[in-house]
Length: 265
Picture (cartoon, rainbow, N blue to C red):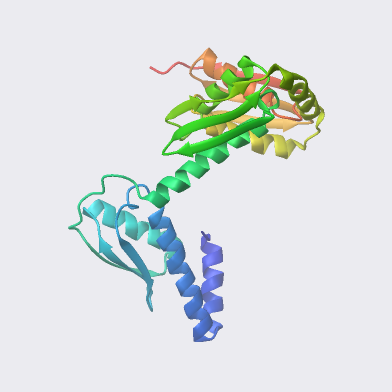
């Protein structure tokens, strides 16, 4: 998605380009708008077609009500830009879809799996030697081997608190022979030096992925590997989760927690 300045620059370039090139750019805009609509959880179940027109974009198909039609128009406008004309020919006679489209579900599942895999990779004590993550319609299946039952339970708990997860089946087996290898791998991760920006970006992503933490109320500062957390949380448990996540990131030397507990009324 382009911002206003980029869209204006593109428009100026298209005016001076041959019509074939301009048409290709317009078709690309239509394709991007089509994908955005197809990925929207409210619109994914409808047969909506986005086509390029001389003035902008045209929407054909049917939705169930005017609210959804307006949403589709707004999404197309975001891609095409404020100056483009969106011709909505959507009818309001379609039944509401019973479930999300297969494509949308697959995208959500892959995103959920990636979130969990990032959490495993970016937190020292949770780095597993052989854990596979499979997600289908929000249901996570964990397979593989780890050295201790504590590691197995910790990974399952992490999966349960990951955004997009509805249920977890933990099929991880425990093999004590793997303990030495796990500790060696974790030791290497602890010794890694990371740039402050790397730590900050990873910590923000991890807090966003954890459903037990309201990351929008937490400010993060990192200087020479020292993480400072400020802002508010609703409980001691939430504060503890945020502090633990921060302390487990490779490259973090210390966590200075200034989080204040503000209980919801």
